[in-house]
Image (cartoon, rainbow, N blue to C red; front, side):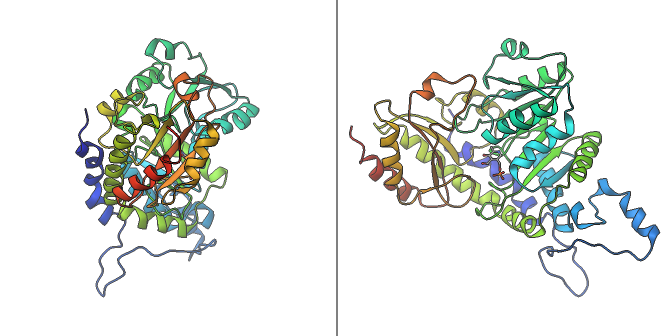
Length: 402
Ligand SMILES: Cc1ncc(COP(=O)(O)O)c(C=O)c1O
């Protein structure tokens, strides 16, 4: 049984890195603490030779044109690569682009891609609407498939497996080392959306090849930026990813990179506090008579909890809630409308608490019968006081008849 410390300790180890990474060099005469925002499209050179020399360095985070990124984007890339434990990183314009770019980079017509049934809905849509149109075969596998079951999904042309742990809305924690072993046995690459586990799940230590981040969430942390990142752990994958990013014109605005870097400075303390509050609320909520179950990875009732306990060093601030079967979706909407501290909104990872109804949003080939018979919602826990959030939830639950 995880203790309260276990949900928040994982975030603390980054304090020094987050405070000192990507700070400008100390120079005689002094300079500002934070890197500047460099806006621009054109970069000018003193000679043709110096321009072509720089062009050859495109795998070294340099730029000869604004569409190749700005200095602050490249600083952010170095910090993200270090936190994920990879060799290099490409920042992109949204978390969704971070999911789609590696699929474009590592797949071609005739390949097969296996995707966890519980991935973020737009990732699923991209696979079904775009990848299929370009001749890639797609199939979905149950996120908690056993090794034997999962192996039956592989085809001779399987080239990528896409995992997300915990799953969107349903929070199944996947057995990533087992999935990695099978993926590599079949000569494929394992891509993982690690947005929930940023800083508390070391993707490359668990066999992941491509780690995906929605920087929009914890790193930016203030609900004011949309950005993403992809980290890889070898030079060959890095070249393929970086080339694809340049070929399709992926670029992220310097303000968004700067804001994300600024958000990262406090991510450790924000998330330690938010994870702690989220765990306390989840534990309290599951005891309320109106609630059937709480799918928080650090709670034993969460599907795949054993893998969370084995593989993660902490917990995030986002979890799913199942209302008791006796309540309709309409009653759940009344409960949600009665909340005052929880704003109704998509996204998560910011400093403010949010609620999102998820019934109808859970599109699955392999639906979990325990989930679909309930009205469900998702909570993102922010920096508010725990007791205030509990009071808000309790007064809204009181509107439901017992
Ligand atoms: C798990 C996960 N991955 C990716 C994304 C996409 O991020 P963005 O909103 O920055 O496109 C989201 C957004 O909610 C998400 O929850």
